[in-house]
Image 1 (cartoon, rainbow, N blue to C red):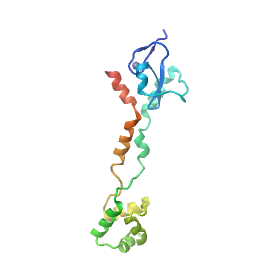
Image 2: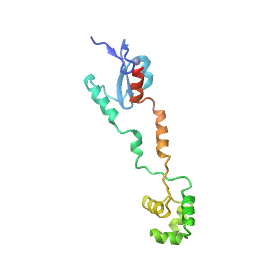
Image 3: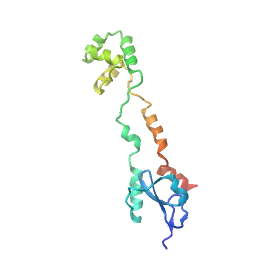
Image 4: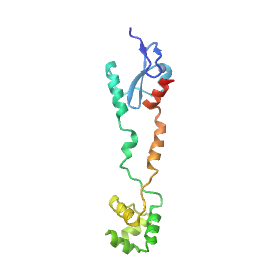
Length: 162
Ligand SMILES: [Zn+2]
């Protein structure tokens, strides 16, 4: 009656179930599936009937990369890009500064990469010089960072299908 099934492979669990946490969800699994997650420690036990709700919530949770959505990263050599963009328009730092209402000294510092432009300045530079100063690879890098997190619920779903 109280046979427990592993929530990953579906095998009946003999003895105490292993409680693990994967992707923020607590699961009761068999011993051999316990390695897919972290041992549940600071998670308080979830009543059985709550589990589907919690898991549904976990699936809808924003993916980690969403937290980085607004995180803008400057391209490497942004200073050189700005200088080249400026020079291709035949502008001196003073002239460019006058166009975007920033000090030439600030632009020089940015071109030497002594400082990073603030968002506002960066946007003005991008618009004026028609260049892109944000790093397109940011998302890819964030994605690859997920690789070390272990299994996700999506991975579990594919294990179950096997
Ligand atoms: Zn299992």
